[in-house]
Image (cartoon, rainbow, N blue to C red):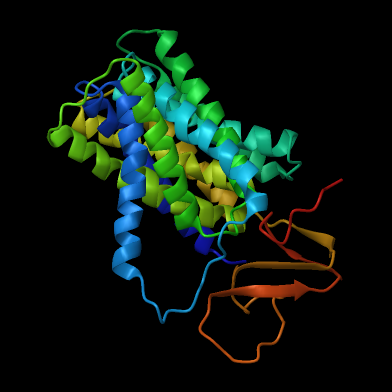
Length: 349
């Protein structure tokens, strides 16, 4: 199986994991709603600059553009993951430490997995359930505040709401994950960022243009823009359950950065949490899911290579891979190891 999606989700998780401690620093001086808007506007601006710098008229189109049928999925993604989730998270950060917030982000993987299994009927083998259990226990370990000995309800509740909304967002985005990820993020960043900033204005918030605003845009460009692009690429090859499970490493990265940057140390519980996180990743990477399954005849457009058994069609002219064009998959029944990627969204008994 193609291991590139694993690399994509690891980079995505690291970049997103950095967002919590960095946002904790920013939310001290920027209104939470306004900060949420600037983070997503930064995602738009960052990818726009990247697009302009890499654009070449003679380049071969490698990605499939969004279509009218994709609008409902994208709209739901923008509302749940682009507006509600970041605003809830920024408000949550005003109540809890950056360390606690980072590790509560682990619940996004759990929310994504539960929605994927219960609503979208993805398959979850024993190794994946054990991996999810390991990561969840690690999150519980790391979320315990040894100084206070208890949780404050308001902050964690707001972050849980944010994680549920991002879980919804992840599953909705899966349905358009074969489209141009940069285009998805640029639209999402511009629309969500603008709406959040307008909401902040309507609440009487004023902008003080300073270094913090520029820093927020940079954080958004990497932790939301680039991170989401890699996340969408991972969805193509892993499906929502596995992508969400791998993404659970992001909170751990954020916790480590919080310890270093914010001087938030919790002692011995870091050790069992680290072990459980590593165990969870090992279980997922070592998963072998294979069985007889059928493919119905389908014609669609997405980025692909010809190194797998699903793209054996011919071309009038050979071109560099990966590439994008409309192609047809014939009816097929076969068995091989696979993940719930673009071509394996079948049900399991």
